[in-house]
Length: 452
Image 1 (cartoon, rainbow, N blue to C red):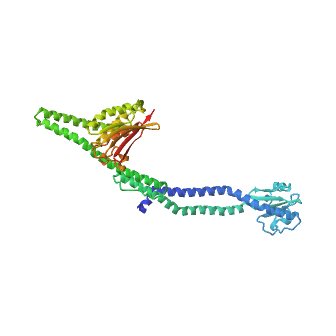
Image 2 (image 1 turned 120 degrees about the vertical axis):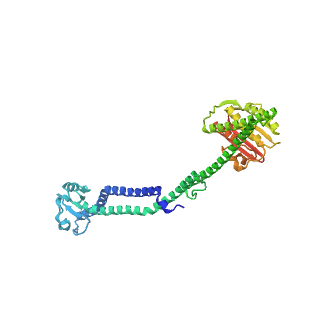
């Protein structure tokens, strides 16, 4: 569990919280700015719409000859003008005569002509309505009174913004912590894996993309652990394969050097063994180099059209006698009378078949059988090498083509598994697929080629 001190030092935690609070603050400031910029006109328009019905009511009352209580509070200054544009003193609210600038002469003339006015003039909100019998009613209100109300609303908005920032601190911290903790666990798992410790795992219980990432990290750690183990097994196997012929060559060479072999026949046997072990060592080194070149993608895979039947016949001719000598039954379970046209690399296809045949014969017990066949599936020709013998465990099938796979886990025979790895890399370079199936005492290796 990550302690609070470590969490408090998280750069990601601080940045996300800062980003959240900055977003809230920016949103509040933008809202306040927009509100302050636009609110005065909007609020003035709202007040004007409130005063217009009142002004119309007063105009209708005066037009009907009824008396208006000039002491009544209208929420604005009341002024009445006769048909000549002169103010009527009896309607000067509060016994005062409004200043001339409160009701511009142009507005008076406009209203006397039968039109209503509603706007701000020189910091005064002016609302004017004509009287049907002649004259005009005006309600005026200083903009400063509107500003007082707006200032209260602005202060409320700013206080609300900062209150939202304070309130957002707790959920922002909690939500960010839910992100930071599993991410730090994944970081720790990566660091532990880099140090050779594959026991650390990320928390997969987190929902969403973070949980999916944790699952992927754990899968990667598990696969890396398995690959590391297979790499170690591979190095051990290759070391053994290299050490055996080297030790044999050295022992026989020292024996010959010391003159311990007295007869020509014995010396000939030693020389033949040295040559055989040298060839074995050379093949192993060549396989390693070939696999490295294929995996590096440095080998060109030129494709041409050819008859797969000819390649299969070459394989049959070469391995038929070998199978017979080994006490195995070899057969071609395919119609070899008609051409099998494919589009691929004939040399590489033959190399794949050789690797699969070597593997099949190595793991087929005496008296067993090895077969070569093909099937057509859609636009593909599937070449198949099958053999009887011990079944490969299901859990090992996905890994038998891997470079660092230890074949001993799946078969009783020895070897480093380089042949199958090379076959897989050749198939990949040709853009095709290769797979293995095993069950009920029969193992099948198959790969595809493009039919034409």
